[in-house]
Image (cartoon, rainbow, N blue to C red; front, side):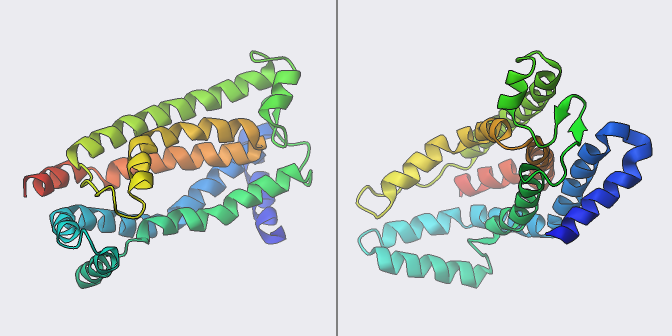
Length: 243
């Protein structure tokens, strides 16, 4: 972990002439973008997998209908179909899993006090929103920094929510029989999934500001990346539904 800390510190030193006291905050943003750029090939692979699963939706519906009374046979048939089409059902998880160490790095560095003294404008990078509220309130110097972050996250979350709802409408999930294992959980997840984008607001409020910067940057990157990688998904979904 000290190696990554040194990288952030060195990057902050390089950015000092441009960003002065906010150099460390700028280094965190650039570090986050570098991490996301490194895992972008996996994100592209996940997008290809998602498009393939959308294409396979009619076949999956037939399998569910055919093996409705035999869950074990259904799972085996689905795995066989994925293997035949060379589609991994877990590909979408890899980009998120590989980002986790970088997030915990930011959390540890500033919550442990190792890089105390760094700030973004009036907000210490090791502080939290509760600290900002206690030092000037919502519209105090530090509170305004958080309000700006909340505004960015809110805008990204709203965009993600609307896009997810649109994709769900164009790519409806095939209904699962009530007697199948996990049917209730799957229905609930499908219903509330679009709202999860707003959970980022809570995360930004409770973690150290350094980790919040990572979250905001990564979330914004994700929204832009998905808009690009999944720009043709509605058409694909409409074709699958028609089929």
